[in-house]
Length: 365
Image (cartoon, rainbow, N blue to C red; front, side, top):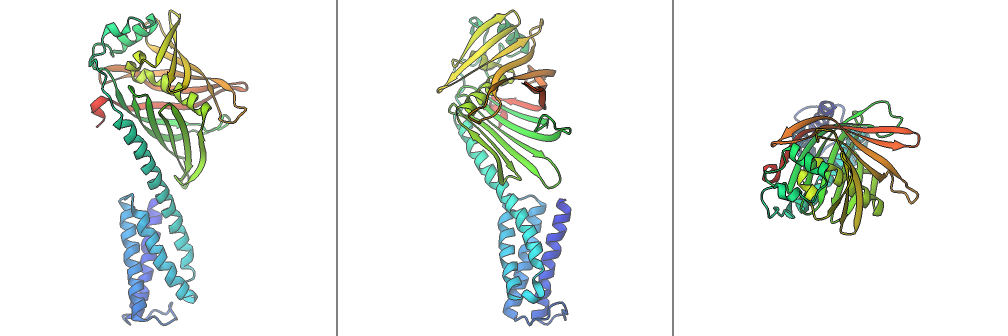
């Protein structure tokens, strides 16, 4: 698709060169019946150059290629209007290029917003005073949590205060969806000042791509989903989103074990193999339950979460289960997981994810 579009831009740019040739009488151009002055010939040449430079920037995937595209379209369409009899069909190509340029601008604008939020999370880094995650920090935790933390390898090593996760995943947008969409995601998580930002790119087909962002900053959550980075499909925030996003943050403790000793989290022992965590941060409160096997490995997380953000939205059980473990930086974490909504009409497993990379603290740089 990219190659086809690139060819269109190059050909469209070279067609403008014909106007330059006619203006300077370098070649007879029968397709252009209207007279072209040398001044206009320079404009035709300028359009050619700008389109070709845009093609180059598009080829190397420059984040600023949309600027050249809009400039080129402006020049081209000016010529089209002036030489409408000969050039009117070029409007179609200009609209195609404009659509791609707008999507590029949307992606640029989206990434600017992401970078702003990411910088805020990274700027709030405060390394935990106690540099080593020691066993003395576990004494007031439920036995199942202590056993898991020790078994994971997180104890007697540097405390985790910041994390970077790279994921690949398969997603189902609706319970009755038959096919899975492939996606890649990147997340930064701050442990000391609870916050995260998660961005995802998902290709639904050759022309439609989804870019999404979930964030939790200052006790507030927000979900944003855009089609081709330009058209809002979902933009949700409010108390329900705050609670639901905080519960997600709690569940991801399995990737950041130091979070278990956060002063914002209180624990309740349920039985030998499970414990409930409740987090209260800047007015947002949520809880979830962790389940472990006999060896002390984490196997499931369950929370009652709001599935939607409408006024009548209800809480449903949301479950994370483990398919596989992997060791990152000497810590054993779930590397392959599934997320499932337990709905009245049946289970909806909407996410299968795999951690492809996980870095802690200064190693994320």
